[in-house]
Amino acid sequence: MSNLYLSEIDLTMKTKIALFVGLLLTANVSFAELKIGFVDMRTVLEKAPQAEKATKRMEMEFSPRQKQLVAQEKDIQTKEERMARDAAVMGEAERSNLEKDILNKKRDFKRSQQELGEDFNARRNEELGKLQRRIIEASNTIAKEQHFDLLLYDGVIYSSEQVNVTAQVQQKLSTMPE
Image (tube, rainbow, N blue to C red; front, top):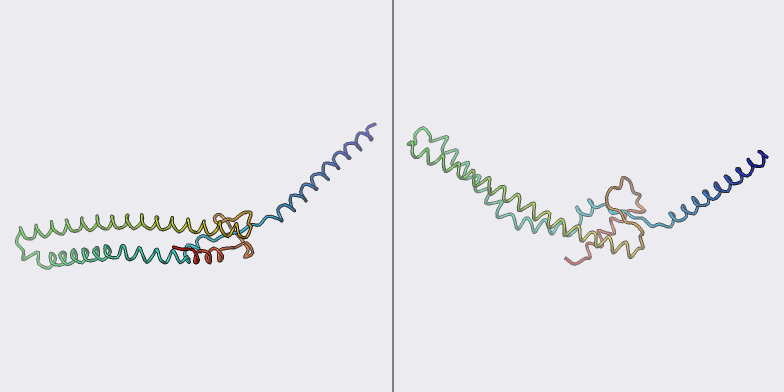
């Protein structure tokens, strides 16, 4: 009776193993039909025509303020050089006024420099957000047109050229209106 019991267990195990192998093969066939792609976001951000235009817009917007900072800095340097050169021959009141003027100009310069940096960062983030939305829009269009099941852009360690659709996203971005 124990031999009969063992053969029933063997038959049950063999059935379960066969069923499991069948499921694995079916799952592999399903995965083979998946169409997966990858977009290198960093490359697209660097080479997108919209990124170049945004950079030029920001340069034009912030260039006058940057030039003003340079002029302020030169003015401070000129006054510091005058102080170093003429301090010995200046009267006490004149030297004190010049020192106060230099300190005030340095304070104004630092404040202007900080404001410029904050404004620049805010605009850069705004432009970057616009560009990222455009990239996602272009990627979604490509995914729908080419029937991708999954399109990845971040956290990918390796992707073959077969699944890399970065060039297609760049091309799509170049045809999108501003």
